[in-house]
Length: 73
Image (cartoon, rainbow, N blue to C red; front, side, top):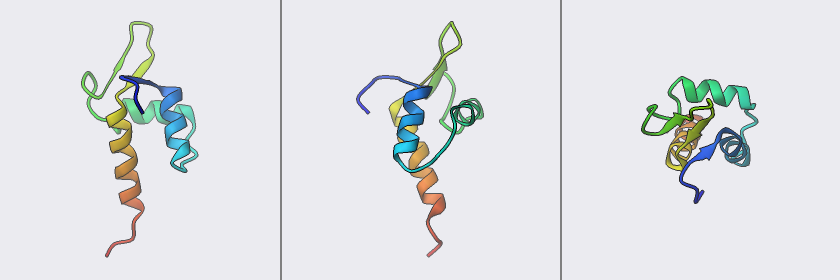
């Protein structure tokens, strides 16, 4: 993920590549709900309303999600 900011479509592609079948509307709700970090720092909305997400926020989201699926040791 070399881009400075990712569109929701690019986020969905990364999430699906990691094996999660999330729909784009689900990801929009998760972004708005803070699952991808803090608005203004980890993601923002353009003037036209599009959400842009930092690649590091996507990586952190996927890492937390994978950790949550690991069985307790």
